[in-house]
Length: 419
Image (tube, rainbow, N blue to C red):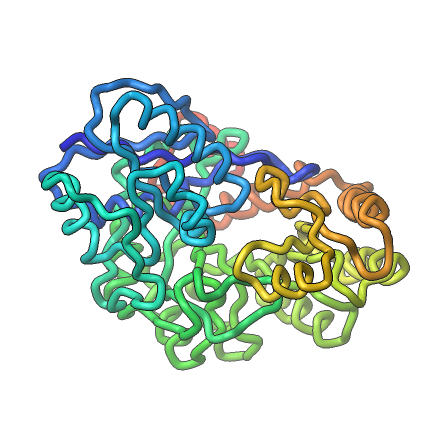
């Protein structure tokens, strides 16, 4: 069977640097497709979708709510040609009832060990409308190495520098943050992968730069320490979501090559100040993820928060607006008080106000969102901050004798200039 996996394009955040990372969901899903089938991949961020008739099945992988309208358009066109379409991914699970109107089947949850029967149903002519495994996560030891061979790596670079490959060491999260749909992000319990499998996958990736996309690595201190110690001999440059604020963990993380961490910043407390300082003391850059529009946010509070980010010398900041995605506590609360403005999913980018804030008008919160981006990057543009961090990564590779393992000619020139 000829199977095409498509990753629909979504709009970037206003003010956000434009670059494309190789998507993780499609390569993880591709690994669940039996080898006897031919698989090709189209990431609409870097390639155009062509509506050819030489495929037997189209699988549309969607991560974000704002991808769904484009995903539906693509699905409708293929189905009009008589080509069956299966939808999957986080956004397809969040919007499963809606997605069924545009797909022959919607796959909900994790696909490991479960997609072969779906293909058998298709070939037998009795495909089910939904395959629902949301609350039945796959056994974590069945999660294998992602099928990155489907990627066109040359398309994923920023100013000539090869971007990170995405990998995960765990699934699920024991935290239950207010705006998050954790049930749809691997479940409400922390499920660490066997460390030897993680190490084997990392060793198989021909890229020195990795992004661990786990919801948070700071969920089990012993496992986290064991993971970083096992990764250290591989000498990778690692970006990750939060790590434990603990001396042993921070040292082990730095030794493993962690040099850039995404850290949620929700107030101007000494707790946040210290957390950022301690990461920097271990030579780990910090990109703050800042959510605006919570019910305790006033205009003065948001402006004070932006001032605080500059005071603590945050390396990068990514601002988003509270967005009531389906199946979240935020959606339940805002819908119950009639504060959701609309459900035009194209505009659910986290860069546009789609609800009524508690302490200001939607237009004023939108203004403050743009104010935050512009003020933080006023003295040093975002592109320059990003370029300086990437140059730092290249210098680390050169000094450690671990040149980038997957280089285009432009990458090699960039590494040479960094000496």
